[in-house]
Length: 95
Length: 95
Image (cartoon, rainbow over all chains, first blue to last red; front, side, top):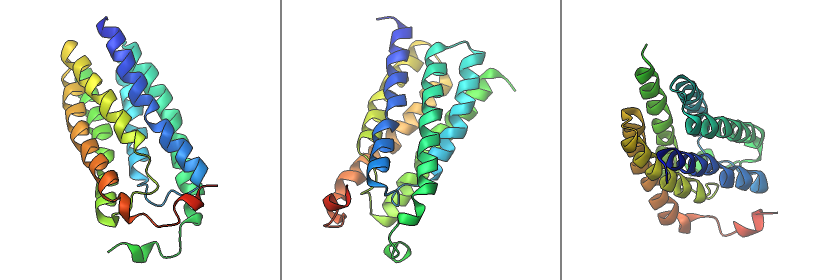
């Protein structure tokens, strides 16, 4: 296995990691327990990773981050769209 | 700004992205809406990224993934530990 292959496998796994979260959120339409800061910070960071990948001409970094940016956008949109479906007692549940 | 610096900033942001989720889960003790597959797949993928970073001797990759592996471990532990605090109607809420 070449180093490039290892990077591609690592990139594929970390990029696809968000898919179960996106499908779960879409299915349950419940996003109360999710912090919007995670997808938001990931989005910003991954755009920088994408630039970094382009600058060092590293294909695994470019492909992995391009896909993740797309998925994180979906999650951010759902976090905002499904916000209203949160239970009314949300605030009181935080000790 | 050097390319290395860009990679370090990108790594810092994506690594810290999980911190708000970890603190939110710890504070609310509610992890129902979180898919365990995301931190689990991230964990596996980031261990591979760490290897990749070591092999190509890329410091941003090594530092960023080392920290993220630690945070994802915390989130996985909480997802399991706080599982019991989920509302009894959890299953029925999934259409």
